[in-house]
Length: 317
Ligand code: SER
Image (cartoon, rainbow, N blue to C red; front, side):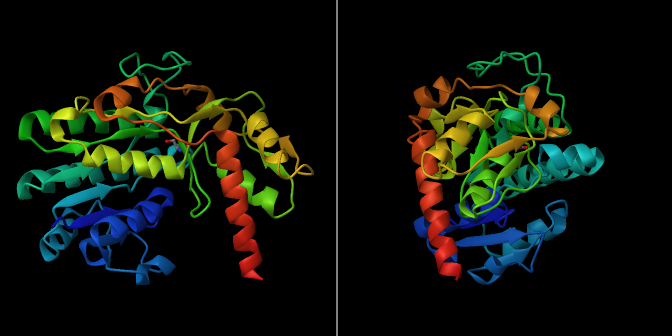
C-alpha cells in the first residue's frame, strides 16, 4: 500500500488534493503536512508540522510513516515572491532539493511537484504556447519553477527518481483560497459576486491568462500520477490547459447568473507579471502521452462555483 506525504497541505491546491488522496488511498495512508499547525484542517486526519527547508525533519516524517510518495506543493507564488525574492528562491528551490534528495536516498516510488505557466516569459509565444519553446521567465517564481523543472528531469535521468510535474495555469476553486498569485483575482471575484458586492480587479481589461477549474486540475494531477511510468515522456513538466479568459469575460459569465454584479479595474504590480505570461497554452503533449482532457468551460465553472458558494453562504447563517 502506498503511503503518501502531502507538503503544503493547507494551501489552495493542497487542501483539495489531500481530500481526494484520502478518498483514493484511505485516511490512514495520507499524511498532511504544512508550515502552519493552527489550521482547522490539522485535525481532519494525520498531520505533521513541517518546514520543507528542514531536511532533517522531512527525513524524520518519511521514516516515521514509511512514506512511499510525496506531493510537494509548498511554494511562494508569483506576486508575494516579488516582495521577497531571496525567500522565494530559498523555499521554492531548497524545498525541492530536499524532496528530491529524500526520494533518491529512500528510493521512494513517486514524487509530484507542480510547475506553472510562470516558466514562460515575454519572449515566449503568447497564444497556444508550445511545450518546448523560448522560456526566459522574468519573475523569481518563474525562474525557480524553470530551474526546478530542470532539476526534476536531472534526478529522473541521473538517479531514476520517478518525479512527475504539470505546469498549472491559474487554478480556480470555491473550497480554498489562493495566496499571493497573479491569477488570484479569478477566485476573489466569485466571492464578491455571491456576497452581493462589486469587485475591483487588480488586472486590466483585456488581460487574458490561462486558467483551470480545480476539479479538472485535481483529476488531471491524479491521472498523471496513475499513468504508467513509460508513458511519461516529458520529465521537466507538462503544459496543461483548461480555459483562457480576460477579466471582462469572467464578469460576463458571472452576470449570466448574477446580472447586478459589476467590476472596476485598478491594475497594480501584478499587471506586469500577467503581461509577461502566455494567454493560452498548447497541451497536446499531455493529451498524447497520458490522455489529458479538460471538462469545464468558463460558464460551467461559473455555475458550479456560484451554486456552491451560495449554498455555503446560506449554511453560514
Ligand atoms: N497561480 C500562479 C500565480 O499566479 C501561477 O502559477 O502565481
